[in-house]
Length: 534
Image (cartoon, rainbow, N blue to C red; front, side, top):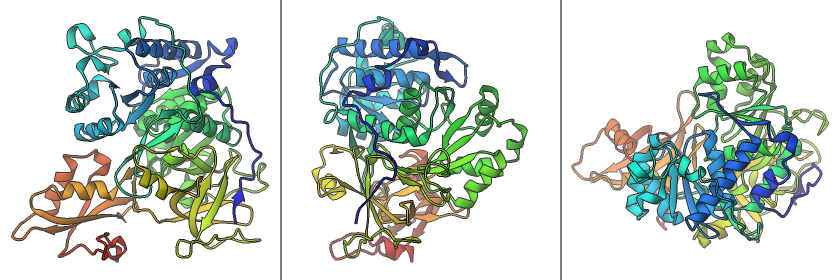
């Protein structure tokens, strides 16, 4: 039995992301602050932002970029990210965003898989971007270093060359429902990272769906510390805040002191975090040294938030603590506790143990993985657990060049299998209780076991390997490797950890190692991870 969102359906315009966000920009909003650089204090108004987006689109079009092309963006959170990302979309091209922590090898894999023709980055990340670009045959002139010295001295265009010409944005035509706007990478429920095809309609839909329950207002000041390259930051921060005409204070990385200083000095009202930030806000004594009374709402996502931890933050900072759930494949939000905690919108406060109710225009199913039968919502209390399935206009188009993975994830034409076990209560509030999928969530980042296993097998002294997620002493899920050594080989735990640390982004590295005789596998060769968990 399916159950629908309890919230009224919303209108989803059949337009591009650019037209949706900026097509109705009022004259009165042009001088409003859109983006504030948290480091320099430099402010970009909405009028300036739209001009920069148009100029970026015009410059890309002049280089022959248009519908069907993929442009890679490798950057931390900086105001220029918004100009470049939306400039790519405005040009009719597709933006594939790269994790700012990626190594050259990881960048190479995504550039090659996405068939990107350009990469836009900053000086700090230029070495690994250039190494990757050369590995896939991207010319130096198609590597834009936004804060670089420019083509004349380095061969790489910079922001001044990209935006300074002031070229008009091109007239482009595409179907918002089928044209891919963004191509972030996700491991889905299992396996190696895959390109997630998100259409203009997907992105427009998710902002439209979350707006009435997220509660952004034009006078909100939103602290943006979660990365824009991740779909969480891209949708719920960048796009949703800009649509609401709020002000985004942009932080390039999380630092607790800078986080608190920005809240206090810029009178931040709303922010989004992952659970590790909640730990700092709940426990660190320095928090008491800052006036954060302007902050009225924090939303946690990317990984499950412990209810007691969330309640502690809410009490300590005297604010509303909320939680949501989503996946890259869902653009990403599918469930959220409303801005009022559910008190008025739903008639009761949601427990922070839950991820809230399905967002508008969506339907859910809870499916027993053993039988394939639906678990019906109960008349009272809470249902038995089952896999959460979601249907709605925010469901991705599919995985890039991977029909098999798409068919395994989207079933019956429109139901997306999340790979998460959930329960539903008597009025449709959903709680995530476990994970079916093999994906490890370390500090909110996705760590696919298959990727680490493949890497470990390249070590000449390792015969076989399996990776699972285990909890450390602080309750944080970490990647643990079970390693079978080649006959006569000798390796230490530290050497295995160092081997992975040198080859992947820091959040992906193996953090615990156990040496075993054999990796347990099924008759078909599939790793039996449940046996490793004991």
